Length: 80
Image (cartoon, rainbow, N blue to C red; front, top):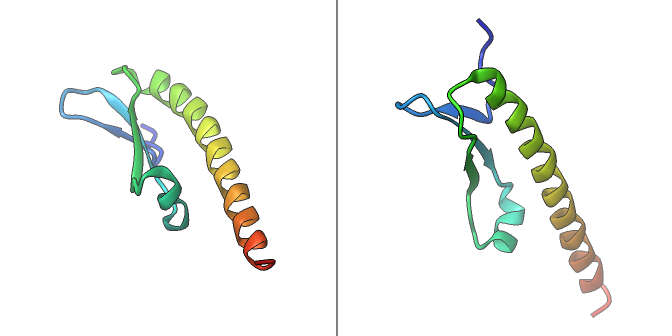
């Protein structure tokens, strides 16, 4: 049996959910949330992995955008 990816967990009821820790330097931009969690609404592991991949891609895009905004702020602060 394959091991669950680190960003997928299973509740006592058997439902899978997605969990991603937000990097410390980006938490201020996300209301100081430490992690992002969403239910994957399934008890099937293969379905959960597929849904988690989609969420991971979306969260990678969000975090990359926030990283770019953060870098622009830091760059602009040099000219003040």
